[in-house]
Length: 109
Image 1: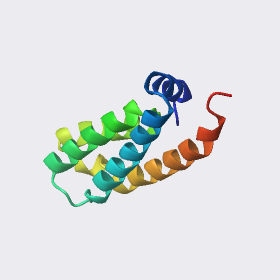
Image 2: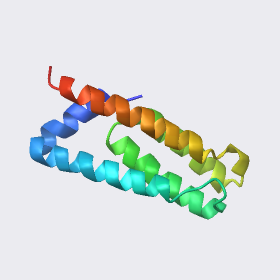
Image 3: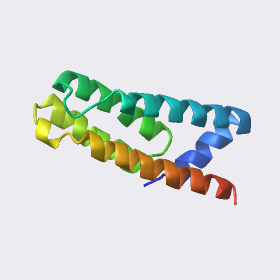
Image 4: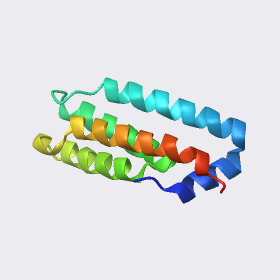
């Protein structure tokens, strides 16, 4: 679900203060993007939203979410709207966020 090695590398390359800022920005932007998507959105909007979420998730090591968003992005691009599950992506984000925040204390151990 979470690529802890990616997170360790990011934290080491940015330093503690910048890493904390990156995390805060990521959480804010992803939550805003997710709140702006709904199952009834058109294919282009969902494709674009899922593309943004996929990249954001991958950058911070949220691998399960990134994979889910990638599949949804491809489905929207192909017009397979029945395969784009915004609610499932929101749930995956919530699970990933909780696991990430719970595991942050163990980084560097």
